[in-house]
Image (cartoon, rainbow, N blue to C red; front, side, top):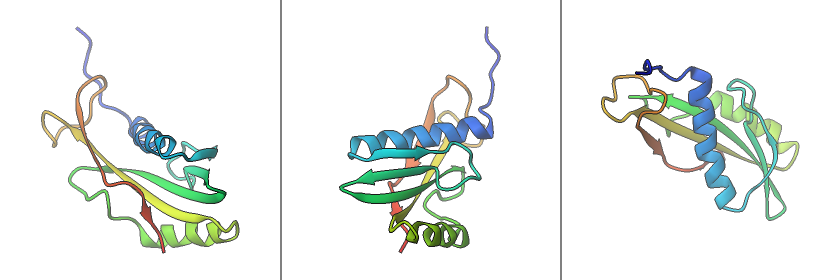
Amino acid sequence: MEERRALTKQELHNLAMNIVGRELQADGFEFMAVNSKPKKNPQFVCLKEKQLHFIVVRNIEYPSDPSVYDDKLMQKVKQHAAKFEAKTYYAGVGLSNAANRELPVYLNEDYIVEYQGLIEIT
């Protein structure tokens, strides 16, 4: 039998990005740039209806609230986005083990997603 392996921080970040990316695609966003490094912001630069959008994605560990963001970071990204007349969004994705939320998320095992959608930074 295969040994259980917890997802790494990068794998959890990539999973969060895939969840957000699928939603963006379904909503008609066109990807201009994608950055999968957690500390390099924004993760997505998208175009929709001729409007540019900067989207910061974060994987948030249980029990933290995925809708709570680092305001200082988001204001910095917003200032950068303003140079491009872009809107700025935060996408916090909570990922936890489906069997026991206190355990890590394991490869090829069920997990719970807590994602409220994009939060516009105004």
